[in-house]
Structures are given as C-alpha cells and as structure tokens.
Length: 117
Image 1 (tube, one colour):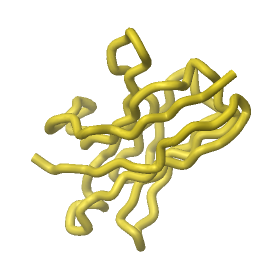
Image 2: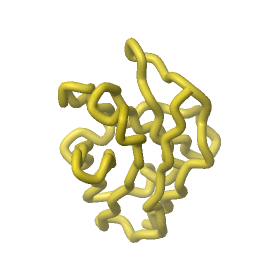
Image 3: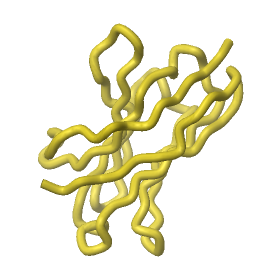
C-alpha cells in the first residue's frame, strides 16, 4: 500500500563501501518499520536488515558488523550503509514496509549492487 523507492547501488570492489537510500513518504516515516532485502543471483530474496518505528534494528548474521541501517527524520530516508563488502553481497537490494514483521506491499525495481573480488 505504501511505495518506497530505493537507490544508491553500483559497482564496487571487495572491501569497499556503498550507501543505499530508501525514500519514505514523510507523513508515515515515523510510524512504520522498514526492511532491506536482497536477491543474489540464483537465490531467493532474503532479509538483510530492518529498523522499527521506534528504532530497533535487526541484521542478518551474514552482514552483522558490516552493515548499518539508520533513518534520517529530516530527509524522510532510511539508509543502509554497507562496509567491508564481499562478493557474496552482490544482488538486487530492495526496501519495503514491514507490518508485524512481514512484508507489506509489492516489490519495486530494486537497486543493483555488484561487488567484484
């Protein structure tokens, strides 16, 4: 029901960093949870990180300690800072609204992240 727009993907060498952005409608930014998902080549979509409406964050074990999800109230944007990137981080990344821990709404076009080793 709420469409979020992700951007910021690109090509980076292993060990490098990228920051993805997810623009959220201003009227709901403070009252929704947002999750980042990714789909690696040949694999199903998997959760990467999430942030609740009160700022509680969760991370997949594979990215813990390397990725950080955060929100900027002034810009109505949720970020995914990705550091120490690995080849296995390659994939299409999506941001979506979460309701009760489940994805709400349809998937957007995503943003491609390619990490070369």
